[in-house]
Amino acid sequence: MNLSTVLIVVAGFALGAQVWFLFEYLLHRFAMHHLHGKGIMSREHLLHHVAAGWTFSTTHLLSWAGMLLVGWLAWFPLGWITVNPAFGASLAVGWSFGYFFYEWVHAQAHLSAPRNRYQRRLRKHHFHHHFGHPMANHGVTIRFWDRVFGTLESPEQVRVPRRMAQPWMLDEDGELLPEHRADYVLVGTRRSTPESNEEDRVAAFASVAPSD
Ligand SMILES: [Zn+2]
Ligand SMILES: [Zn+2]
Image (cartoon, rainbow, N blue to C red; front, side):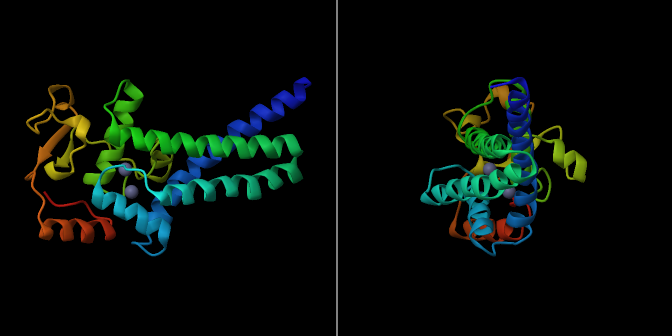
């Protein structure tokens, strides 16, 4: 591989990943929240807001396959036509990398406590989106596009309805662990009822914050 091919591959990979990060923002804001549950992508995402947790489901396989197809059926030929096959392939690989990085960051945000500044900042960013303002903070891996499009909100403390607290936030009595008290505050009661479940569903599909 000569130097120009290496540069083309690196540039293609970096661009592909950046294109994903922009799409992550646009899809989350417009194809998921603005559609209020119309179509499978929006419905599945808003159900994620109702459940407020991350579990693997078979619909993940559908979106993984869909995003890989976009990479290889759209970005690969586009990069091939505009530059060359190596650029097209690295664009598709970069896009796929960006997408799976997003899936991993999102799942980890729900499943495990932050271990560094990046994870801490991104979890606050994402949980304010869930519990404070679902029409803000659409980026999950980076906050850059929220800043660009004016949807960035970073409150000092993020309010978390007790029934929706993430397992890693709590001690065995269901109280906030001391290390998370600077970032989060628990509100409301722990118990969910059929009425509160229905309220959560209505709120999620309207893209408004769940009540205390
Ligand atoms: Zn989430
Ligand atoms: Zn959302």
